[in-house]
Length: 141
Image (cartoon, rainbow, N blue to C red):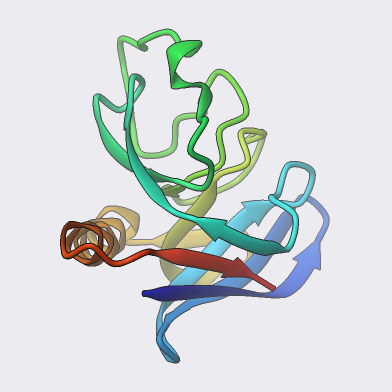
């Protein structure tokens, strides 16, 4: 499976874009301009994240989850304690310097709505593709 993130606009602290799978537009994306991943291709792996206590789609196989302390309270807009680029739910990027790519539906400048619903559907597609033995490639343009 090939996932493509196309960045469309950078303004101040945020970078907007959209995510497509095999040429079909799936959702909008939002990143912090100061901590975004460089353009290129990444292999997505599902790794257990200590902070979220679940598997998350990470962009690098050596995610520093072993260094992350487990947080007592987690909401969908929380920030990881260290740089760990991954696809995750969230509705805004203010002070988010962990390299995450937030997914959801575009609402207005620097804001996404329905992040959990969109993330769950995207996660299931990635999980099923990996369980079938396919490689999931993320291309950031």
